Length: 474
Image 1 (cartoon, rainbow, N blue to C red):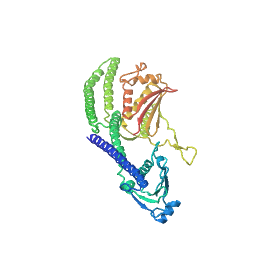
Image 2 (image 1 turned 45 degrees about the vertical axis):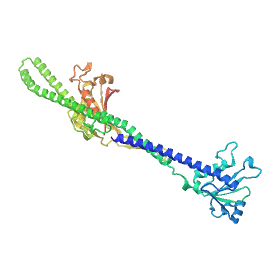
Image 3 (image 1 turned 135 degrees about the horizontal axis):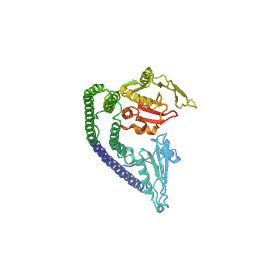
């Protein structure tokens, strides 16, 4: 509705702009033509001694002013401004009248400008009357309220009072500047409407793209155009269905996990009665594997739902606590001290070189995330490093936008490319048949990374494989 009103207002202003521009142009054309006709008639009136045209009067200059005008001291004429600028306009007589020497000399005094005569229209065979008409039209066009004196040949000087013909008060209103302003406003309205439409769609697309990130909305307010509101409503319905499906999936898995607890307990009790120790151990291993698979799938579903509320936390303290827990049980996990960050300064007009600053590594890296999920992801990566290598080294890098948790293993026989292929659910490498697991560890880590606006990548190192867990800080 607002967009339609704005477009209609722009169209109305556009129509008004065209009307005002056309009307002003027509009025000024008529005004100039009237001044031209008056100039032509004025010339013949001076030449023949007849009455001047309507709106123009001849006033003979007093004797003293006649002397000033003849000597060229036009500023000393009574009524003329001493600071006026003078334009002398000679109008030669026509060829047919050259015997009489009927030429006109005009002096135009204006406080503001000197009239340019070079741009006056000229054509072959142009008469003196037409030249006079071109001059009066120029006076009318410039609207400067000039003081005009003239004489025909050797006749007396006369003041020509023609303010009602070429004065500023006689000029029609010029609305072309207002028309140009309205055109600019109308164009701005149309451009705003035209640009806001794709911007609103792109903004919603960006929100939808990042909806799984930490703090992302679970519901979008229908705003913008009617089409966009319909799309947002449909997306909200889809998201609601998706959340219900995930919640139902989690409820089913929780129920299955709970219901399997009782028969699993009975199986354990019955397995304990088996006399064959080897067979008893195989039964217990199968039971543990079955319950672990259910718990892993349930964990993955809860992570996918993003049920944990995000909050600000110190990633430095979290890493230190995780590594300390491993070290307390004599696991080969170490925390590498972060390096100081060297920051290049900006340019300055007072120095020819850029300065440098050092950010201490003792600072806490604060992120906005889910602490339990991040702890699970870091623990999974450390466990993988210990399973497939001999030790794990943890370090942390950060900038203003993101934080990167780095876990390096030592002695791993797998390559980074091979591990990248194991990010899909239930995918395990060929060399993992003797290692516990169900193929969901890296899938859970990758999902947690996406929930935090980041990614999980691997790269080969000199000692093994390095995992890089990147998350957004805000």
